[in-house]
Image (tube, rainbow, N blue to C red; front, side, top):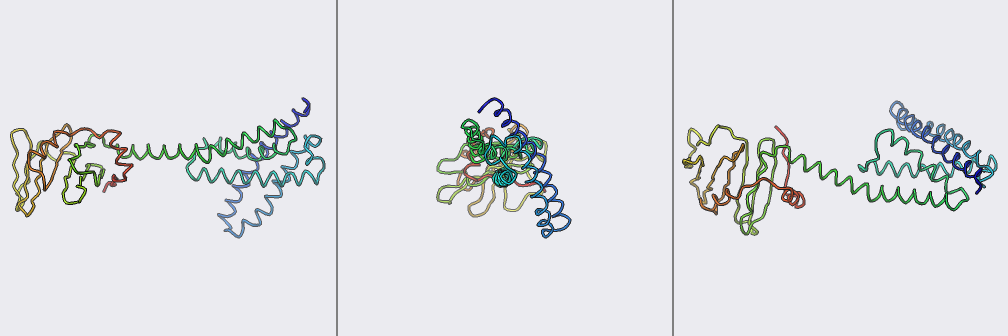
Length: 305
């Protein structure tokens, strides 16, 4: 390929790109407006008019290379070439729309408009009888497939995961955990606007420990008044509140203030020393622990109200 032919080929591919950048979004917007006002039945006449006009515009971009690209040598050949490029390029645009609907990032609105012309330019490059031009088209196609099929979806999942973790951490002052009791595992965790709740169950589901972290309702722990039936409540000199429900297999609850939160741990199987030991292991929820809760799908978020 001579320098003159190379220049005409570059101009040709640029014209294909620029023409379709202008035509495809316009056609898409026109079809959308037509469907909005006239329903699905009005789209067919719009397509019957818009597609031939677009193909006609695309045909003119083959004129600079009529002596370089065999399929652009005559008007009928250029028309056939334009139809092929339009079909192949439109398939590429549809693939891009599918990737975008799957939350694959394609840049700003301006970038997405500019990208609409790329599949047509790549399709046109395959018809240029030059090894390097076709290799460039293959490289562009491979890059698009790799990004749209693998890299983009992976980045999308990472963004979604990070956004989900950020939602759970909207109130970090309430996100505390205790050491998992021996023989138990986290069965459920719930994040609410003013509380964080975790349940630990034994493997055989015959015992549990519950951790509740909430915003304090009173300046210091105090037993409910009037006292609830079948419940004993005491507050010691360290500000630690103990409640005992006098029922078969009664639940013991220890409540302690920790920084700006009120933390309560409850159990039917552990006594006071055991619960106090668990409270002594209280620590902020780490990224590793949050990742594990999300991976095991045991954490959920409750909306306000």
